[in-house]
Every structure is written in C-alpha cells, then in structure tokens.
Amino acid sequence: MKGYGQFCPVAKGAEVFAERWTPLVIRELLNGSNHFNDLHRGVPLMSRTLLSTRLKQLEKIGVIKRKTGAQGPEYHLTAAGREFAPMVRWLGEWGQRWFPSRFGSEELDVSLLMWDMHRSVKPDAFPSGRTTVEMEFSDQPEGKRRWWLVGDGAEVELCPANPGYDVNLFVMTDLKTLTQVWMGELPVRSAVADGRISLDGSRTLRLCFERWLGLSHFADIKPVKHARESSPAKSRL
Image (cartoon, rainbow, N blue to C red; front, side, top):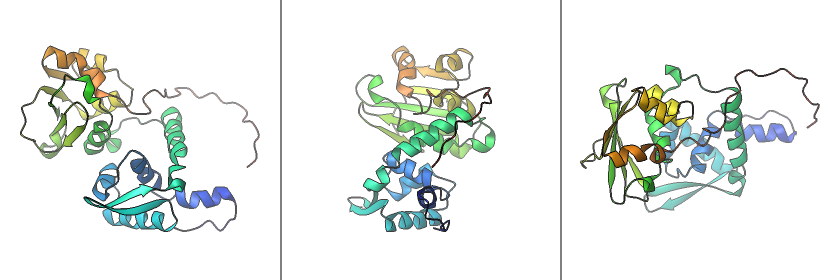
C-alpha cells in the first residue's frame, strides 16, 4: 500500500481504508463472507489476483486474520478490522443520501444483486419446509437469466443453476426493476401492480413475497433530491 508521506492520522487511516476496493472487501467481510470465492462474488469486477494481494496486505497490517476452516482458508476481521464497521455504514448512508445510483446499465449486475439479496431475504416469512423461488430476468442473457433461491425456514441458498427442486414461486422481472425495489427506490406493490414484477405461485406465497424479499440496509435512506447550499460549519481535524 502506497503511503501519503504524512503523520496525520487521517492520512494513515486513508492508507488502509481508501485503497481501491478495500472498503468493498471489508463490507463483504462484515456481511459474513469468509471464504475467498464468497468474497469475490461480492466484488466481481475485482480481479482474483488483486483480491488475493489485498487480503495479504490487510492480514499483514492486522486488519484481518487468516484461519484454516473445514472448507479451506477463511478470512476474519480482527478487532482493528471490525472498527471499520461504522465507517462502512456511514459511507453507504452518505452515498445513498447524496450520490445515489441512477441505475444505469453500467451500474447494474445481476450476479451482485442476487448475491446481496440472498443475504437479506427472510425465509421465515414463507410457510415451514423447503421453498424454492425461481427468478427470471427478462433482459439478461441466457446464462444469467434464471436464478434460484432455496429456503428451509432458517437459511437461504443462492443457486445460479437449477437445483432440481419443484419451484413454489416464480418471479419474472427485469434487472433494473428488482434493483430499484431492493434499494428502496420502488415499492414492491407498485412494481407488481404495474406489471414490472410478475408473480406465479400460491396465493399465500404471493402475499408473503414482499415481506420475504427484504431490502438493502440502505433502503431507508432517502436521497436528497435538491441539496441546499449553506455555509459549512467550521471544523478542525
């Protein structure tokens, strides 16, 4: 990591936290991704080589600790790493409030959306037993068009390939619509009412879909549509 050549604590902290991709890697670790492949699914545009390098750097400075688990190497935040949690949250809140996504095609990624969503759905919103939800994105290429979420009432597994179970609820939509819904930009009921989301399944599952889906941690943060200019309060760091 290249330093700023300053003793200032802001500079020292930025040498770690402001390194490209690092806040997103820490975000994934805070969200419970501990294996290399899971971490990469959360930052799919980051090369695997760079991710490996960044993990080694974070381990060297004591932000993460590498352990051997039952399924291979695991990465866990240390006490120093866990102190980044409020900074990651504040960064996300600021971004959602002042610089929200415009949901252009260059910002949409179906793999990332499904990876994020599967951690936020509420499996206990559906009846007990296994429930399989198939999602089809009408605007995606064949290889990324269909995804399956399989819940057992306690956990949800994301399957990019057909798991072979009977589908209990079929959801048809497009990537932009579901991303807007998950980010709190578009209410589920509105998207269903105007046909942007189509649900096919039992009445019970269709009625529970909104509660089951869950939303992003930042969905409650409302973007500032017209920021007012004001004289900033003077502060000194």
